[in-house]
Image (cartoon, rainbow, N blue to C red):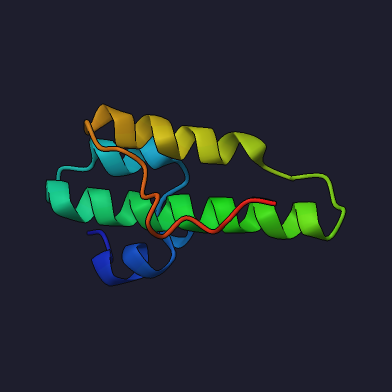
Length: 86
């Protein structure tokens, strides 16, 4: 059983890959979208923080995988809550 509350707070604690969110039969479409938007925000925020610290981005592909998962649900990325880029 999926801990929906935990998944919405920190998707990586519940799922290994964004496509697992899409494939879940336990989540509603709206829950999937909310979880993926949170994951999108977290992945982008991590990229920005690493870039600002002068570090190599450790998982640049994760952001793309989250966007692919959203695309599978016919949902656009969450530009309203996306942290600004440099």
